[in-house]
Length: 245
Ligand SMILES: O=C(O)CCC(=O)C(=O)O
Ligand SMILES: [Fe+2]
Image (cartoon, rainbow, N blue to C red; front, side, top):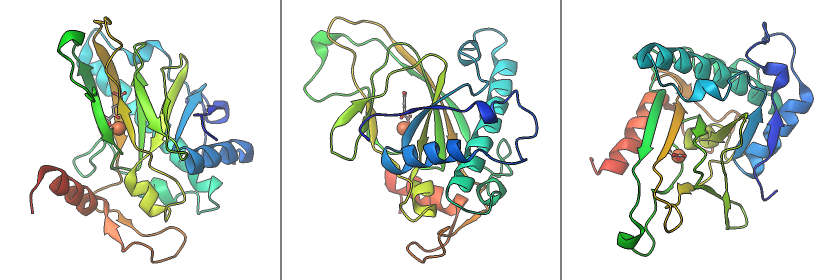
């Protein structure tokens, strides 16, 4: 699979109550296949609408409500993931009980990329450098400008444009470790706009992390990676990134 699949999330749409009952095998299979092969998926019919993405008025209240919607969607995705891997359905949810509190590092970030003067651009410059995300999963809401690219297994960068009516979801490094490298945390980047395109770029990104105290052990029972708490893992990654020993 060398493109990012679009998967219909209707069975777990936020408008549907009682998602804890039963599960959709087909949806789980599609999600698992996307996360094992590309590490990214577009979810459609999530219940989060196009309009909700772009809060403009009464920002704080809207932001808090949007955070809550993202949290709920993330928990549903984590639940389907657990099912799809044949794991105890609550395994990921149990480790994400404190999203939105001080004991959990999950954040909603508003990322503004200023306009670029193409005459000043140097060879190889990017809007956002190549990286993978640290946490469990990430929800990405992009504007229409596009520019996001994902490194595929074959070694090529593939475009991940904004697809109206979908939420782009990707696996983070800690989830890859948790699943003993079954689900993949793909490297991605944001390109500069094409020459002459002087638009800014706006995205909203919901980075999901397990609770600081949650103990993450390889879910297949192997000892591929030692157990680590969500908090300690994140601290380690920040230390590496920011050069602190
Ligand atoms: O702005 C985007 O579309 C994605 C940014 C990103 O990958 C990140 O901040 O981790
Ligand atoms: Fe990222």
